[in-house]
Length: 295
Image 1 (cartoon, one colour):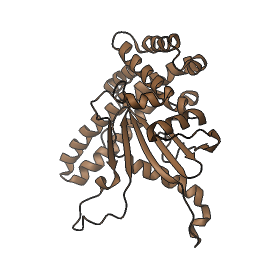
Image 2 (image 1 turned 120 degrees about the horizontal axis):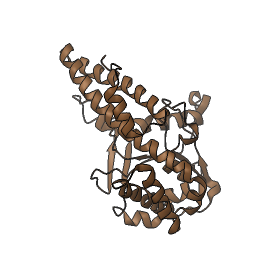
Image 3 (image 1 turned 30 degrees about the vertical axis):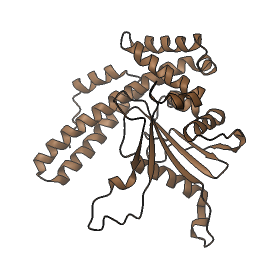
Image 4 (image 1 turned 120 degrees about the vertical axis):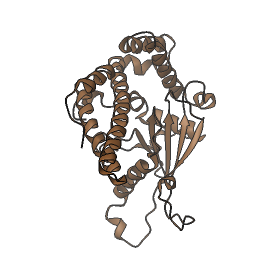
């Protein structure tokens, strides 16, 4: 998005996009005990693919490991493909013109993590594979390319051993759980303020909230709007895809209908988010809008 630059980051990214907390998170998810923060390098991956798609966290450890982390409230089965694009971008930056030279260039080992805190039931951990996306062929035994992603459920109480390994992650999980709890009974902004107060009174993420309380309110509101946006995009894209598919009478028609319908709706909804509208306001705008999403 072009607007709202100050609040473009999520709460998760704002908390963990620095060396101390990033290293703490890495140790927690991998069971390691690194202590030297100078070994950590934060990689910037903004705008790798599209202006509206950014990697949440990318760090290098001692130039030997690259950890890519996405934080999601819905499970996206296409994450292996997205991580493939992200890591390729990093490797191309490392290689430069060396990619055309004969000596082997050593690359840091990649690790891919999705931290899930959505409300739908999900196991403590699951592995997603790039190879699951490949079309089936007569030679299914031969796979020349694969990539695995660990999806870890960080919802409160689901992975207590993980929460115990990272005070910062535990604080974040507690805060999000409180926002959801309060939002069931009061307006979202009031729920966020109450969750922040809850954490401050108990010494949870104190430094972060004392410095970024107002930004947190705006970031959470935008995150909630984006969740509503994704739901609207998926549903509208499915409907447009079905309609287009029937009109064309071909599978290709259905695919193109979903793709173009999604693009049109997503662009419109992103404009509404940039205007600072809430998720409920976005829903009403879409319902009343005369913009045609047919392709």
